[in-house]
Length: 175
Image 1 (cartoon, one colour):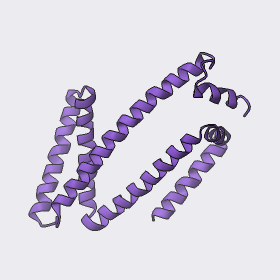
Image 2 (cartoon, one colour):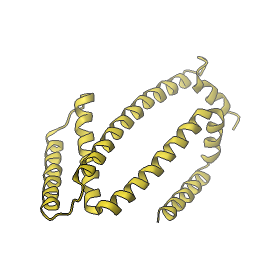
Image 3 (cartoon, helix red, strand yellow):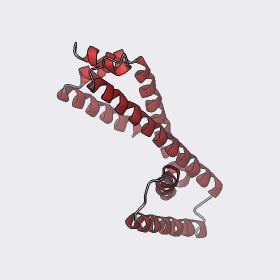
């Protein structure tokens, strides 16, 4: 199943890049920035490991526990992001968080009362690790977005500042 999904995804992405004409720009970017290939490889490996962990969790604990883990991970990551970075959560967001927490608590109580958890500590350890990785990744994406915006601003000024973005703009004109 994993191989089929990944094969379809790779084929769909390749076709999209070829049809849109962005394949050659992507290859030019990758050849001009070898460090980007390292980042893409690490991202692919993380995605593959994530898929393996998803299937392992479903096999060991079942789909209900996996749903609880994912809902909890997203909710806690959102709340921690609001506290850490000072994002505002409105009344609707608080209501939604309350509904999700209430649902997760109800599901947990049901699972515990019916003996569906054999190793509850493993479930919470896995969920807390996923939340930590999620927050770290969002912080990295935020920092990279700021760097990309600065590079785009430098490129729009004519690219005469000698940065990597000016090299990309110059190499892009040859493509």
